Length: 109
Image 1 (tube, one colour):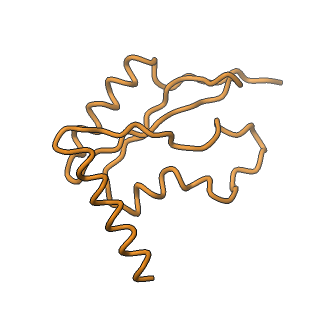
Image 2 (cartoon, rainbow, N blue to C red):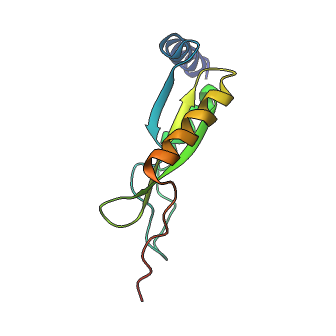
């Protein structure tokens, strides 16, 4: 346990140095596109992309970016430094505006 806490603290120190006062880290929210209807959504490690940011205690905002090649929703998360929540939201708004935000996937019968 203590080794993992040290590892988390080391990673957080690296992130803080990398992000500085006005940096953001744009990172996928999920390892794949959205699942099809009735497809199992619980898979090992599907939470890892957002989970690590939560463990570090960094602010993050999920941004829908439209549809991927499969015609299913994709997105990223905007991660900021500690207490930079507003920066995450501002960058997320600009990305959503630039990429068109959430787009409904085609409904197949």
